[in-house]
Length: 507
Ligand code: FE
Ligand code: ZN
Image (cartoon, rainbow, N blue to C red):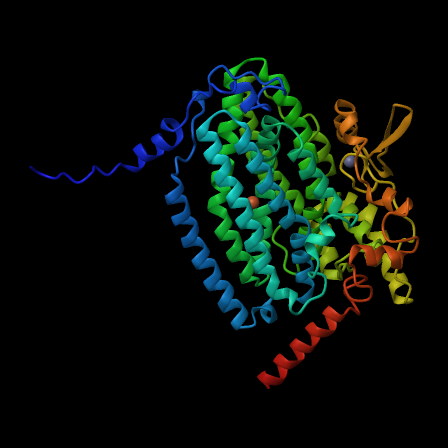
């Protein structure tokens, strides 16, 4: 009698069994009760088996790859910390980019983690469930590694101490929070199109590539390494987003109209969030990579243009508001920056005026119209500062009911006039920053009338009290440390001290 060792399954066979062989059709409960969210959005799926799994990873190989990446990342983070890497960045101002990233983007990663966990529970196809599970774990890992990458800076710099608490409260962070809340409370297909396709596939390069290059240019090895570690996950996420949209479009011709509405909505919502990124690129990186307008051209108009040309065969068109984004490209970063500059007393990070060299760089990048509109404002603010009268805006702005951004964007065709739309619904008037946001509201008013708008909440006394001091306490913004101009801040004093020490050692 001979004993034969059990045959080892190939990776391919293991994957097939994991995603096909272990599934069954439920009989104790009808499938519609097991997957109650699969149909209410109106998406028609003829054949769930038609989903093509983009990466075919088994769980054990997934853990193996991810563990390897973690080991490398934490080795670099250790050496960054042991070598006091924070002293080798280009300028202390740079850390304010990390403050925005940690408070706005990192909790978004966590929200994406929860969203993909929900998606994984709700789709009647194991391949898609496994892919959603992996992305859910990836997003949790991104949140954790970003927190670890930034935690070293938190030992030295202000403004990084309360990121998760602030995410649920501070006025500009509600922009990102409401974006992910909106996505997570939609159905599984809308979530897939919102995050998997519109955000990951169409817009994520605008978030990651310039941000990670910005970190590299400015000597932030810690964040660069996180970026590399996330990059292979990102390419998996983009592939999933693209496969998912193609699958949905191929299943039934009625799906295209629903998908188009979601693309229009989520393009606009995602694009509105990128305003803060445009400000970071053009005003906050001590060493610039490229102007926002060029990044928009490369990553949206060129890459996105090719993508939408490819999707045209399903009847899918470029988002209807893309032309507004193009018209805003030369002024988006400046309109955003000028707002934060005036709201420095109410922000958890520092702002500052650009230097003469930086103004020249901006004028070269953005041309005569930009100079005509904005140079006089910068000159005016500089004169006030010289007199010791830095301008801080004492009023509270009107917020857009959908994107929750203060009303500072201008008319697509008139950059001297604030863009303002309003709609009456059930006897109440709601306000919007753009046609894009107004249309989103009018499609689902019952969803957006529930929005938690920070300014309204302050006015109603729900944010700690009636004074700015009360509200700053409620926001965990440490007055005199986290806020106001970079010039004169404790961060600046510390940074200058480090530079002086360096000179002493060198002499
Ligand atoms: Fe992520
Ligand atoms: Zn808006």
